Image (cartoon, rainbow, N blue to C red; front, top):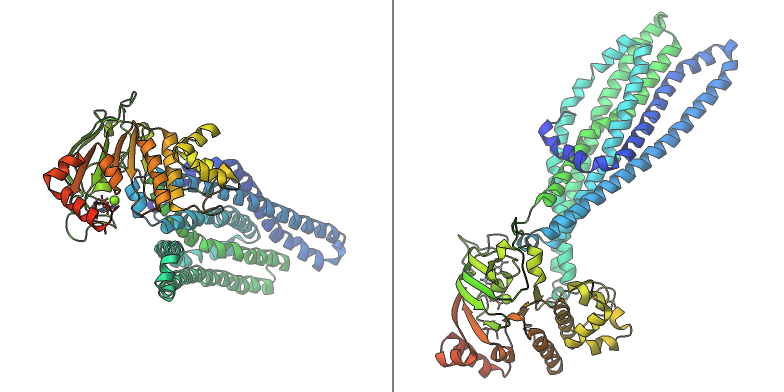
Length: 600
Ligand SMILES: Nc1ncnc2c1ncn2[C@@H]1O[C@H](COP(=O)(O)OP(=O)(O)OP(=O)(O)O)[C@@H](O)[C@H]1O
Ligand SMILES: [Mg+2]
C-alpha cells in the first residue's frame, strides 16, 4: 500500500531468492483464491434472483434451483479455501526453512570473533522469531493480497453492474483511511524491531541462566536472576501488547470506511427505493456486496501493518545471511603439498577489535607485539607466561581464528593468508582445555575430526589416547551417547576423547592448550601418556601448565604482556635468571606440580 518503494527491497529480494522456488504452490494457491473470491461475488450476485424469487411467487419454480446453486457455491468456497490455505502454509514453511538453513550456514561460516560476539541466545532468537515473522508474509500477506483483493474486485464488479453511480461515490471514501493506515505501518516496523530485540535479549538471559544454574545456586542468586529475567519478560510483553494495539487500531479505521459506505447506501439507495426508481432486489444485491466487502477491507487495512512486521523480521534475517567473514581463503590459494609443519611468526602483532569484549577507553592494548618465533618441523615449543600474556591469542593465529594485525604467520614458509582455509585447517589439530562433545555416540565424537574413519581406526586412536579401556567398560561401548541424552564423562575422560580426536586427524601441526584444572594422579598420568604419543613427530605449540610438559619441551617461549620476553631450553632459561626462572621458582616452591604461568 502506501509504502516507500525503497523499503520494499527486502521483499523483492525474498521473491527473487526464495519465493520463486515455491512458484507452483503459489500459483495453485492463487488460482484457488480467485475461485474463492469469485464465489463471494457470486453470492452477492445471487441475492438479486433470490429476492426476486421470493418477491415474485409466480416464479417459485426457480427457488429450488437457486437454493441448489447457493449450496454448491458455498461448498466450492469451502474446498477452495482449504486448498489455498494448505498450499500457502506449505510454501511459507519452505521459505522459512530455507532462510533458516541459509542463516545457519552463514553463521557457521562467519568469523569466530563475530559469532562469539553475539550471545548464543540472541542468535537463536533470530533463527526462530525473526524467521517466523517472515511466515506471516505467506499466511497473512499473500492471503490478503490474493484473496481479499480479488474478492473486492468481484464485489466491485457486482456493485458497478447494480449501480455505477453509487459505487463511484462509495469509492471516494477510500482515501480517508489511507493516511492513518500508512502511518500505523511505519510505527509497526520500528516496533517490531524493538520487540524482536527484546525477545533476543530475553532468550539470551534464559540460556545463560540455564547454563549457569550451578553458579546461580551456589551464590544463592535464584531470586536476583529471576527478578532480572522478570524485567525482561515484562518488557517483551509490553512491546507485544503495543503491537497488538497497533494491529487492532486498523479495525476501527476500516469500520469508519465500511460504516460510511453502508450509511450512504441506506440513505441514497433507500430514498430511490421509496421513489420507486429502484427495485428491492437490486438494492439487496448492492447492499449484500457492500456488506461482504467489509471483511476483506478490514483485513486489507491490516496488510501494511503485517507487511512492515514481516519486513522488519526479514531485514534481520538478511543481516545474518549477508554478514560475510573477513577471514577467507585466498582468491587463488597456493596448494599445500606434503606439509613439513614449520610455523613461523614474523613480527606478529595483534590487538582485539573493540567489540563487546573490547577495551573500555581508547585503542585496545596490543595482545601481541613484535613476536618473532619459528617452530621447526616436529619441534615442541611450550608457551608460558603470566595470565593475559597472550598465549591463547598466539595459538589462535595458527588456524586463522584471527589474522595478525601486523606481521605474518607462515606455514612451511607460506603466508597463511595465501592458503585455502580448509586446506590449512586440515593440517592442524587443536586440543583445548574445554572439550566440546556433541550429543552423539562416543565413536561419532572421536570421528568428528575425520568422519570417514573406520571403527578400527577410531578404536586405534582411542587406544593411543588412553581412552579405549574406559570406553569399552561403558555398557554400550563406542555406541554410548554422550552429553544431554547420554552418559556424562569426567574431565579426564573428556580430555582423552579430545586427544583421540586429534590422533585420528593425524595432522602435522598440533596446538595444545593444556588443562589447568588438576586431574587426579591416575587420570593425569593417562592424559599425559596420551599427549606424549600425540605430540610425537608433530610440530607442537603447547600452552604449558604442567612441569613435565615444560621440561619435556624442546624449547620454551616466555610471553609477557604480548611480547616474547625470552626463549630457549629449560636449562638455558633457568640459568638466565629472568622471568622464566622467577615463575619457575615461584611455582615449584608453592606446589610440587604447580604451573609457571602466574596462576595460584
Ligand atoms: N576475545 C577477546 N576480546 C578482547 N580482548 C581479548 C580477547 N581475548 C583475550 N583478550 C585480551 O588479550 C590479552 C591476551 O589474552 P590471552 O587469552 O591470549 O592470554 P593468555 O596468555 O592465554 O592468558 P591465560 O593464561 O589467562 O589463559 C588479554 O589482555 C586479554 O584481556
Ligand atoms: Mg589462555
